[in-house]
Image 1 (tube, rainbow, N blue to C red):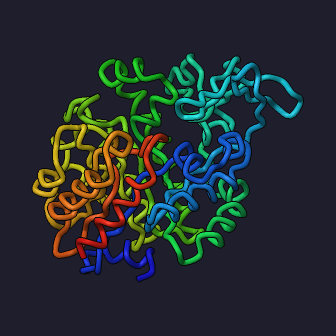
Image 2: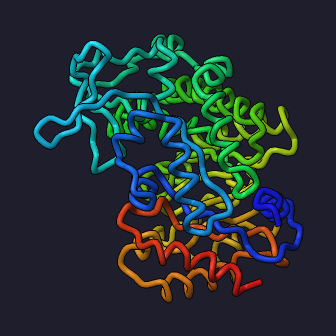
Length: 378
């Protein structure tokens, strides 16, 4: 079966011959699996997309998640990767052991009124808060579909041609809620703001909704019909269920509602790490089509998630992320079979995946074990 149709049938509750396999592969793991130099990915967004697709294909995946990253100029200085501008001026050091973000030397190299800076804020870190008032929130630029089209339409076309019908492609809405807010306020101040400054939080998240919707609509316009909506930080390991319902729920629901209004057939799933059991029912009520990554490190099982979520929503994930590094393929396959058993509903509504992003040291045979388990559990 065509991988995209396999995924769509799974989301739609149609019985399928096997469960789709979609572990969370990011650029650092993709580089290792394909033998690609990390700086080649950092410098060339087109290469980044192709590398992730190739890594997914090599490990038997049915889909690859597509992320948009900025084009950067790098230079190695005494073993440290530095970003420079076109004139050779140092911008900052790139964190090669973490999320490959540039840690800016100067706060002025980021402007909240610059759509490109906002679009790629996760790759432009600085210790100073970028927003300090609701007036700042009103000045916050929202990259629209024209921005994404001019920056990524040609690259996405290349990726689609490369993938052909061998693998499905998943679009990325990024985030509209806590992870978005933290990028502008820093994690400690952001958490204080939930208590001390709710109007500012809502103002910034309202802009986040606009941002995620525009990015999602671009993906839909380019033919991507499965979208990821991220807020890995908005879990009960970080905030309380009451705070989640006050701040995250309304804005996540707004994104889902607007994108489903734009295209009723699009499938939207969330990525929220950690403990989500106290808000599982709320997640269903946002209008999401799928919930992941069911991180067992959050203290719950796929069986418990299915019992709480009900039968009408697709569950995604559940295999212990750390075990892709420390365990063997037999253990991964054992976990995968259990996840399939407890996550599926009438041979559908479950996608086999990792409990979070797979670490860069993961063994290739462990990723392949997911596909093996999927085929064994037909």
